[in-house]
Length: 75
Image (cartoon, one colour):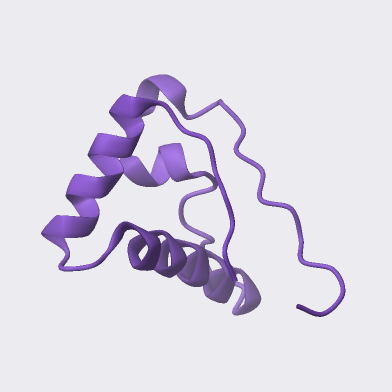
């Protein structure tokens, strides 16, 4: 499924670099973060980062909400 998210240029560059450093595309890196966060929550463990900004380690912006709407219906 394709989605569109809007982030500022600085955040994009940081996320892209972290994806490259891990040998992944930006899309795969973000999908892995989301998968890890949702898997941890289902096992009752620490859910990890609560936002993409927190995952990127941006302490100044961790209170900025980033909402990803729940999927409804079938693709």
